[in-house]
Length: 130
Image (cartoon, rainbow, N blue to C red; front, side):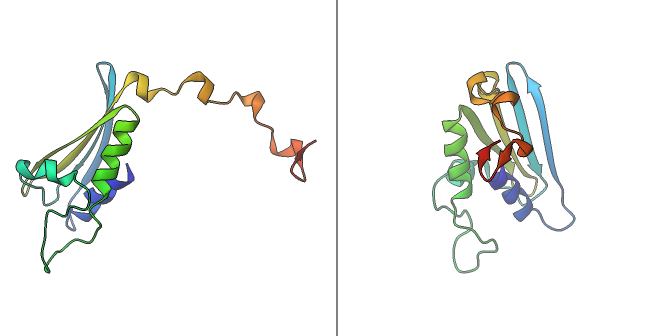
């Protein structure tokens, strides 16, 4: 999410807007980060996910960055069973769409410690349970 929000803010000029929404859509939870920034040609969207890629090249680049943000965001979301896509048009902004399937959106029960398994601060003295 950090890379998606950072890009939305970076590519949106002063006075523009970044909107974050999330909603259930069928068997998934879908988060959208939409901006009113510079946007990009739909043909450039696949390149935006390539490692070390800046869509604006040359010595006169207006925006800093390594070109890894979207590449890593997609790699991580895919590894977690989610889908990440971009919808964009020049001058109309970009919307990042993060789709979490119901099973990916809910942690497995064994991944969440029960309250009684976590010692309270008052039960620990000098790093040992009291």
